Image 1 (cartoon, rainbow over the protein chains, first blue to last red):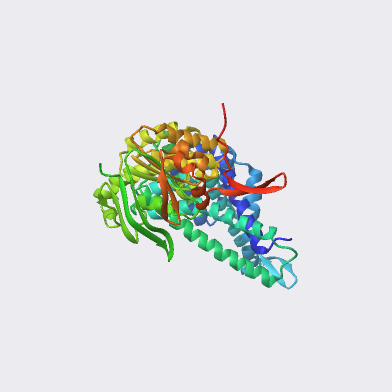
Image 2 (cartoon, chains in turn orange, brown):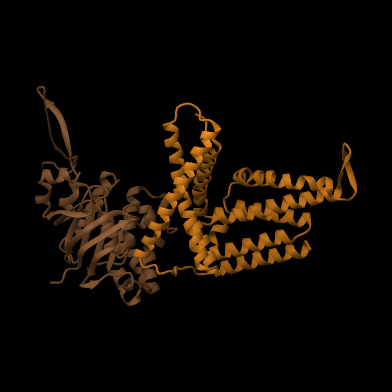
Length: 269
Length: 268
C-alpha cells in the first residue's frame, strides 16, 4: 500500500530527526568552531548573521559566504553536506520568492523575455536576497552542526534567555523524537492491518483519528513528565549547572567575530 | 515502632475509574517490599501516592505518622527533605529522562533541591561511576539502549542517596543481562537502611528483590506474606491473573495446571 501524504511527512520528519542526531557526531569532532566555548559560538555566529542581514552590497555578503565556507572546512563540516542539505534547499525556497524581483524591479533593462524586461537592478535585488539567505543559513547550520543541542541551550541560558524558554526548547527537542517515533509506529501498525487501498475520505478519517490519539498520548506523556519532574524536587523554577570557563582563545575568537561582523556592516552600508 | 508509611482505607480513581479501593497497609523502615499484581491492579498508582504525586480521594496516607497531604507537600520545610528522602523510578524511562544529556539528567534532582555546585558535581560523578554510566555522560538519553535508559533513570534518583526507593516495574521490557544488573543492584541494598518498594508482575524476580510481598488485586490487598508463601499459592496467583492455566494432553487426556514463564529457576 502506498504511503499517504501525512504518513510520508511523518516518515520525512523521522529521517530529519535521525539526521539531526547524526549531526551531533560532527559536534564531537576537533575543529575550529568546536574548539570554542559554546557561548562564543552562539554570540559570534549570531553577530555574523546580523552582519549579513545589514549588508547591502553583494560583494560583502559574498565575502561573508566565503568566510562561512572557510569556517566549515576548518570545522570539518562536509561541503557536500552543506551544498545538499543547505544551499540547494535554501536556493529552492528563496529562488521562488526572488524570481519575480528580476522582472518587477524598475531599472535598466539588460535582457527581454518576450514582452517582459529583466532589469539590472532586479537581478541585483534577487542575487542579494538569495546570497543573504544562503549565507545566514550557512552560519546557522554551522552553529547547529558544530554544537551539541544541549550546549546551544546552555549557551542561550548563559546569555540570559529566560529559564522557562530554555526548558520548553529542551523538552520540545527531547519529546518530538518520541512523538514522531510513536506516530510512525501507529502508521506502520495501521498499514499492517489494512488490505487494499483506502479511499481519500477513509485516509482523511484515519489521519484525523491518528492525530487525535497522538494528541491524547502527548497529553498523558506531558502529565507524566511533569510528575517525574515534581518527584525530583522541581517546584516551578528550573536550576541549571553551567561549568564553562572562557579561555584567552575564546576572547580572541569573540573579538574576531565581532570585528569581522562590524567591518562587514561598515563596508556593506 | 512507627511505620514509615501507613495507608488507612485509601481510595483513588482516575476520572471515575477506580484504581485503589479501600487499601489499608503498613510499610516499615528498611524493608524490601514487592507490590505484586497484574496490570491495572493499582501498583503504579500506589507508588505515585507514596511519592506524594497524588492524594487519596478517600482515606488517609501517613508518612512517619504525619498525614501526607497536597498542602503539606507545598511547604518547602517538608517537601524538600521529603523529595530528598523518597524517590520514585517510573516504569517508562522516557518519562523520566527529559534532560539534554545523561549528566544533566543525574544533576537535575540535586540542583532542584538547592545543593551547592561542588556537592552536585561530586555526587553526580560518583553516581555515574557507580552506575557505570561515565562513558555516556554527555550523550542525550534518547540515544541510549533500554537497559542504559533504565540505569540512567535509577542514577537520576540514586544521586540523592534516598532512604526510600520506589521502583515501578524495575526490570520490565529489559533484556536478561540488563534485568540481572538491576536485580543485582536491589540485592546490594539488602541489609542496608534503604527501604525498597518495587512494583512488579514478574514472579521470577520477586524472591530476589523482596522479603515481603503485598499482592494487589483490583486496587485492594488480596494477600501479604513472605515471597515463598505467596508464590506457592497457585490458586491465589491464578485468581490474581499472575499465572495462567496451561492446558495440554497426556495420552489423550486433557488436563490443565497453573503455568509461570520463568527463566531464573535452575539447578547448579
